[in-house]
Length: 248
Image 1 (cartoon, rainbow, N blue to C red):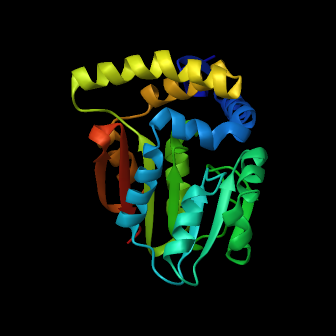
Image 2 (image 1 turned 60 degrees about the horizontal axis):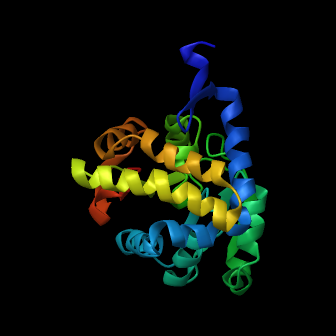
């Protein structure tokens, strides 16, 4: 294998062509327990982070949202609740995640304004200039080629459209990062074993967080994809971060 055709899967080096299938396997395994594990892993903080995402996004009436890697619908439901006459498309590569999302009560209440699509963030099945808002929460670090996904986000957004990414990030304090690492590597995989019967998938998720670029590096990648006015906000000391960019 050469450097050009390999990527990381957690701390492993794997062929690029294999990563999507491996990630698909992880999320197929955890789909039924995904929401409860998010609550346990983050102490419920992921809900506050998604609310903070909506506060900064400030959805407006009539907008059309594409929520990528949005399988269980958390972000799409929040968006539709805040913006009258808006519409949302939830795209995910893992059908079992979408099925879990469609089974939630909110999905039934919002069915006329909500579509569920199986698809790839690096090759979106939508025309250019199709959406007002593109969101991706805790999903972009699992994409094989992040820059390709950002370019696709730019392509499908209309002029004046907005990208917003919520992802785990880096704490700008070495001691706090060390404590967080100890918790992540020792507690979360064990929790995954107990709750979901799957230690390996949660070991991967923890490792994938450590492989993701820091806040400034990721902001520069968003700019490289063509976005302007790129900014970020740290959440909970930088455990997670929101990145925002505009297609102008």
